[in-house]
Structures are given as C-alpha cells and as structure tokens.
Length: 292
Image 1 (tube, rainbow, N blue to C red):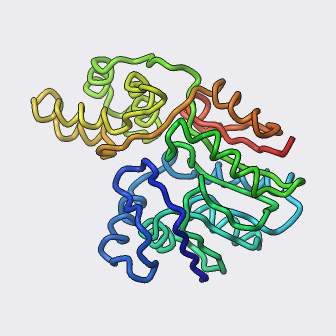
Image 2: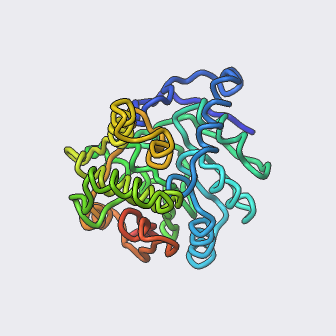
C-alpha cells in the first residue's frame, strides 16, 4: 500500500498515541499489537456496530455517485466497508502506530493510499466524492472544530457527501449519581452485564466532568478504582463498571451546538442514529452532509 509522509503535523488529544512520523514499516510489533489488542477489547458504542456500518452503507448508496473516498482515521470496519463497495481509498491518520494496529484488524485486504498527516492541515491536492469519519471530532480540541470542517469542505467535490459519526449529548448534566450506580451494581449486577447499559451510565455520569467542552472520559474509571481500593465495591463489581480508559480526554458538544457548528459549513441532509439502545439516541449522531 502506498505510504505518504507529511511534515504538516500538530498534536491531537487522544492520550497515548505517538504523534511522530516514524515510518509505517518501523513501528515496533509489540507496540502496534498492544493497540490492536486494546481496540479488540472494545465494543459498540466505542467502536462501530454492525448497525452503524449498515447505516453508512445505506447513506453511501443513496447519496454518493463517484468512487473516490477519503477516510479520516483508520477504523477497520469503515475501511472494510469501503473496500466491499470498491471505492478508491485514501486514508489520512496522524499516527503510523495506529494505522499499523488497525490494519491488522481488517477482515479484508484492499488497495489504499495512506497519508500520515493532520486533519486540520492536510492539503491533498484532490477532491473526493465521499469523506467519511467515525468518531473523529472527539480527537480534536473544541477550538479546532471550525478549521476541521473547513478543511473537510475544501477536499469535497461540489456534488460530494460527508458522513460523520460524532459523539454529542442531548443534555449537559447527568441524570444519575455515582451513589446510584454503586447501589445499582450491588442490587442488580445483571443490568451492567449488558455492555450498552454500562456504556450509557458511564457516559451519562461522566457528563459532570465536562469543562470547556472537554470530557474527562477516564475520570469515572479512576473513581471506580478508588472505590475498589477503599473496598466499597468488589473486584467483580469493578469489572462490571469500568472500561479502562485511563487518562483519556475527548471533546464533546451538545447536539444542538454541534448542529449549529455544522450548519456554518454544510447542509445537513440527514441526521440519524442507531436504534438498538438509548445510548445512541442520547449521545451519538450520524450526519450526512452536503455542500451549501
């Protein structure tokens, strides 16, 4: 697969990624295998569900005419989808480490042109029929959203389409308390054996940590571990509650604010979400965007 390096790099905020431009081939096997193992341990909503992939497929068939696609990030299931639809793929990701790890998780092999660059500064000298990104904005600083969308628009053909899945929230304050979660896991542990139930309460309670549209996504995990060390919850209960996010900071906007930002750059042709669980309705949106 062709690899293109670029010097136009500035750091993103996903903790733990190495934001350097070491060559793809020199990424240490132990490092990318660790990232691949970490990714493999996560499930929807943190990674694309089959329902989400089906939504992408439906939107592409409805709105996209040409075959040139720009993928933002290196999400395996998105790459496999575009391969199955026989698109000409260019992929932009800032991290050789992440690309190597995600490539190892693909179900299919297909030609891709990989560009190591920053989404805010990329200048690809090409326009695309489709630009797609799964949970990309959470990797940005809130102040960078405008430049991010502006640069996406610059690379989009006049009749092209953008598909973005974005974490966003219907509310800014949690409906649940920490003590209620602890009480629930003790009284009804089966509730948290459902991965989506656990994710819903995790995101909901974590809303209280948002400051300046930055979300301390690992903060609740640290609280759970503190409760375990203080012997207020058992090891079994800890496993039912925590996700192991560590010191992960992500950006989050309310759904109304995100729409406002998007409308400065695009027409929102469709706004949809997965129906399987309320976590998607309350905390995630998929947008089909067109040029104005």
